[in-house]
Length: 366
Image 1 (tube, helix red, strand yellow):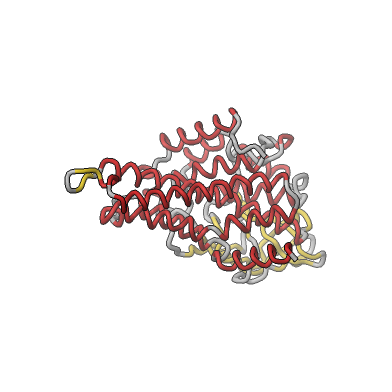
Image 2 (cartoon, rainbow, N blue to C red):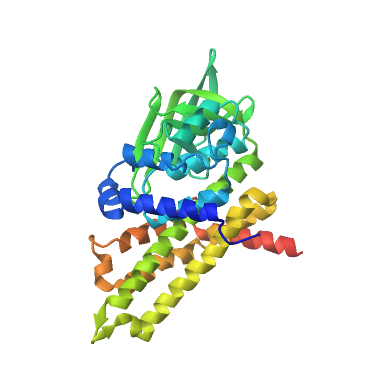
């Protein structure tokens, strides 16, 4: 596995970084959208689509770039560094991978093409321990969904909800128009205002069955989402660390930069070590998502999530370097800390993943 980026990947990273710095900076884009349920504007979403980022994981014959999870992770890292609040991950990763992994690409060709060209925003509802199950039933020639999905990302911005539901044929993937009848969307408040979460109630909502959903394929999609979200968190940690280190070089106390004090140096080294350890895990997981077998891919996803708690400490440590100014509303450091805390809580806290990781490694060693 080559850990170095290719020239094309470097160009993708630099182009995305420049676009976000110019068109979606924290001060002029992210902060005004903190209370906006959609988390994006037409201009910024169109710009991301024109760069090709929404169609990275869409097959070429459906209008996408047909690239790998490594390219998706590169974009995700830059979005995390910019605290981007929009529905890119839900649409370009979760929805695209759900449709392709579950074999729904042909049945949802128009949907995939819309994701690729930016005309369609989609989100995916995964079942977990906190969500009520969603059931599908026949109403004449039509299919209707009933149930609730909690913690659903980007539902207010989405045109289409991809829901996993049980019907007579077992677990399946269904498409629901979020603006259609029987769909109720309520915001859920969380610590991170750059992550838009909702509770969606489905009451005989018209739906279309796209494909069967085997447990192995659903697990693979969940791993993909975890891995790319880890790349987003890596970008957030890297950005707040860089800002704190730069602050330590220029902020003076007792006539010298605070970065010359050993205590501050240790804090900066701790942040750097944590970020770089996370980077190696994320790079391996992105590679494994496309190239490794199911067991290695899942272990790689578990590792990135199990490490989430440590990655969140980077935001906390950065605020220590910034001092009192880091806690103020005018400073961005606390926004980065909240982004990292939301990653730590995403799809369950790190402890559950550490437990599963330890059990799998112990079983492997017996």
